[in-house]
Amino acid sequence: MKAMLLAAGLGTRLRPITDNIPKALVPVNGKTLLERNIKYLQKFGIFDVVVNVHHFHELMISCIQTNNGFGSRITISDESDAVLETGGGLVKAAPFFNGEADILVMNVDVITNLNLHTLISYHMDKKGLATLAVMKRESGRVLLFNPKMQLCGWRNQQTNEEKISRNDAGLEPYAFSGIQVISHHAIAGNPFSGKFSLIDLYLELAKKNELYGFDHTGDTFLDVGKPEAIRKAEAWLTTNNE
Image (cartoon, rainbow, N blue to C red; front, side):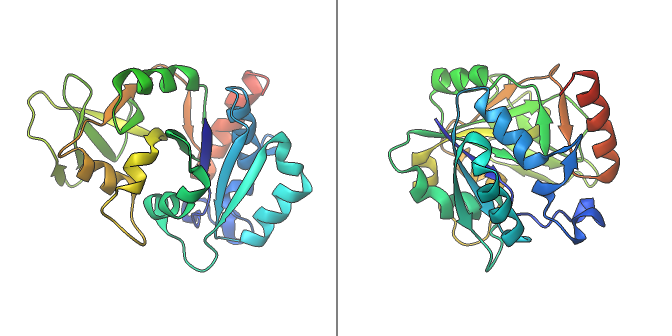
């Protein structure tokens, strides 16, 4: 399976650190988030990776070339003209995945010990258009799943705004971990264009098709999107000799 690391964001939550470097090159315990997640993917046999770039794209490309892809075969998806968000970025990169049935997609600014083999196996078993890694944890925005872990909606926990795709009973909130397996068919047939979020695509597809959540509550998950989160991640990495 091939993968895509979503790395084109502006990293506004990490300012002032990202005033001079992209968030993917923020060091955590001596290694950048980019290197850590390329190595993370390698643990599960994934060595073909697309990385999209925008913010300080020259630094990203130079880092990848200088380090020979950190041992992986890295393809750059260039969004230097305009950042396309998660959905638009994946659609732009879709030609790089021709011939692949499914793609592993993850945000570059997360650190986790989620077993990707288990996630991928679950996705293959369910045969849905996409499988989203989710957890029971505090989050300002959550995805809503029915008892079969089929995606039904989204909720903003602060404003109580909801977007409901399926009016199923017994909906439970889960926080999205920014890691998913998505079928190439879902990307090719998506109804959006330009700049859009993958969550918008999932909510649209959930109206007619089955999209699943994979509950990995209990795993370590660190969203390294804020300066204080870097300190927490460094403490965890030190404890686990990472």
